[in-house]
Length: 199
Image (cartoon, rainbow, N blue to C red):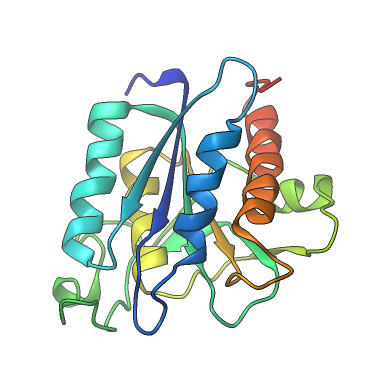
């Protein structure tokens, strides 16, 4: 599939459970004001916390936008660090979404492989990134809920050209603007690893 070599798609999630404000979408909106530098085009999209809508919207990203890279951002409510997820897993999605549904058979794709890895080496990104005031850590377990579901679907349709970043909830010290600056640095490092200089 041919990609738009200058386009990066970034998504965040809408409200869920008792979180009226989802830090992921707030950070992505702020990132859209900052941009990614150079000639990189940034397109953003909000994903609702519903499996069917995530499937529809992530497919739209790959069929309509055809980005070089799709970056999905979600909130990890109990974390204080930014977490870079390496892979998406296909099975075990039994927790219901906001509409009370989960994927058929608990699978992202019934015929899909058990795990799909990102083409981006998240360990390398972690080593190369140093952010004031917040840790950046590596993970191979994105949680088997809407976050990992979106990641797996995007990895599948994007042939590995997707990444997932978990961010903490907003606090007085950790603002949406601060998270956006962190995301900007992280995504620029990923683009460098892709061979696409962002500045």
